[in-house]
Image (cartoon, rainbow, N blue to C red; front, side, top):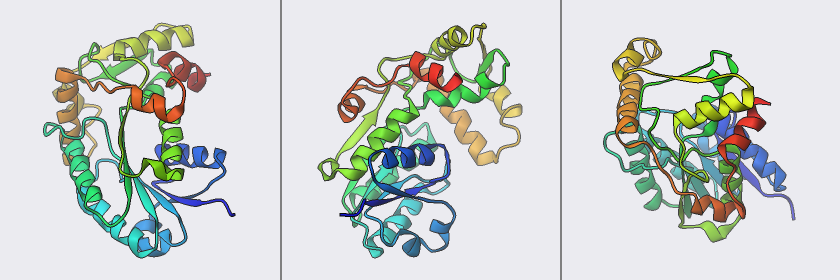
Length: 263
């Protein structure tokens, strides 16, 4: 029997590349897809068994995007789809999270068997700042807010598992790291890994919008400011048990992830 072929949308992005690598390690054949899936989605998806559906970041109509891709996947003969959602999608204060919640509803009422993954923010999201030798993590929310930060490699491994095993059809899994952590924890552990102090600079949402976010599309900037306000008030905790069960081991902790990524 030939190896199953799996389409990975946004397959050349950070998440897509990680999922494709995890599929390869399991003997599957990933088909990374980018703009071609927007041009002719039925042709782009023809011949694959399953689809990992990642919408473009901060999409202005994620439910509509997911609906179009589901219809195309069904027309192409795809057997099922795994949707990349987000932890805490049902939070009206965060418009892009709520867009994913509505997209989940589209998926549940759609034409194909489905699985939903709800990963928390990646530990890797801080690597850009840490690699620049700035000795500072700049955030627009409370550095003591609690997150279920998760290793992207673990999310990718869980995604590959759900894509290749029909036992996960109809399941929704929230994916959090092994223990709750804060940005202050990220700075402390990164400093220990790098052998130099890493500080946290906390700014207001308004200051971030006028500096770091000044060049962004106004809609995206406003959505991010809303997200930071939510983080400031509530953090983004996420449980570890579903990911532990999918991996068959403890999820990778912050120190191990940073040591691997920062070398």
